[in-house]
Length: 255
Image (cartoon, rainbow, N blue to C red; front, side, top):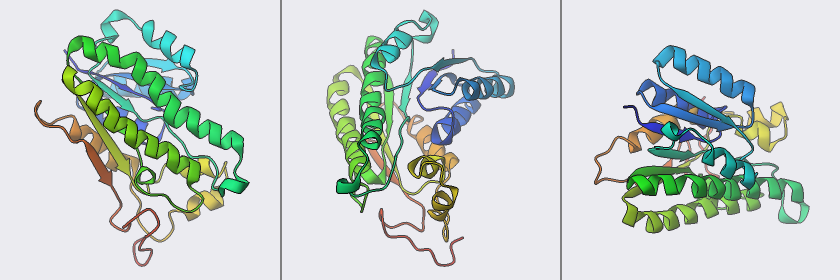
């Protein structure tokens, strides 16, 4: 029987790449996201290419009632979840605190913190019932450092860092692994969302060096799930070779 992996934010970026590598390795998938058309397209492609089963769940992870109701109502054969990948997250805006847009703050807090909590609260009892499982939280270098104008986004990712450590304490007695993967600069829709569709600003972030790609991060995520039962990677920071810290990048001869 194939393992079942649930991936939030599976319609693009790291989530989509995770769906591909886990499908390639014969995991049945539960894919969640707001964009139903993308979920359906990805599901069709993965089933056809890898011969796996896929369940798509379209809801907004910020809606706690929708999260709880959706997970509670999935068919019983899908409730034996082995791996939860808390990938859904975003950055919106790049302003000082005094110039910050409160709507942007709430969107980040509701998605990056509350959304992660809602889905974990719904799925964790299923893992505990099985006395095994693996929760993988996608953090960020922004959860390890604070950089100019990153204030609220950095705060949300620091929360993911703290929650990952807290989950590990709560889950250890139930034989459940908890891993945080914290990437540095990665080229996805992330910057497009942060700059609210401004292509020029978004593209400029990656000029002059080779950033991580979603597949790079997905490969590492998958690796953490292949270790022996007695081995867990607690926390892993993953950076482009050209990046030394959140704000230090070598942009010379690295295109």
